Length: 295
Image (cartoon, rainbow, N blue to C red; front, top):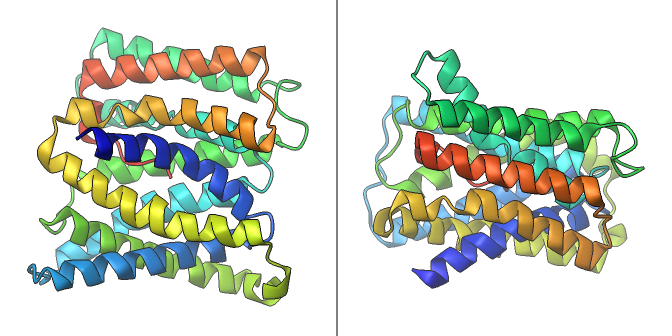
């Protein structure tokens, strides 16, 4: 259990750094799309090799398409686009608001919410607001790019919320593989429409970007999602979903240590507020059932 938890703590916390390095010389939608196509194909092949049932109904396929596009295209894909301008640590902190957005969706769905959950959401969004204050953001992080990350968090919350309400294949690895394939195909197609392949010169892709791209496929997707699926079957959800407030801290530290991303007093204060609010929200309202990986 400890090993699997360490994987989702460290790996998902580090994917924001890897994305930031990848998009330095790789077009974002094309890079994210191919990442999920390759990872999804590998996971699908693994499911078939285990000779598990891979029959799927039309309703389950549509459910995978909806959840996959919201989570991996709307969530991860938009984060990848935004990280051309937004530091990895800041992106991770903004994405950490996903559980808070899930609570908002539950309220819109007229589900009963506890007082502590409401307080946690209010405090968490106050922390997000701190990160968006003019003059406090890094110079290259435009407000538009930061708001794109916030919108990505909303998409991730929508996909997480939908994932508990639509019909999906019973095998979580099979469902995840299909979601990756469908979302990857959608991102790649949009990348082609946007002309990304025509601006890509393989000779211009740096070695660091290639390494980050490979890391995102093998470690960030295949290994981490496999560990996550195992944890869901063998460990209490309340333990598994502690990654929701561990990942942003790891992302901020890695961005500061490796890419020299600035971490000022406001960032530290916002990190404390957001992480604490997410912890309170997850523990008091059971949103851990619906939280999905951030990257």
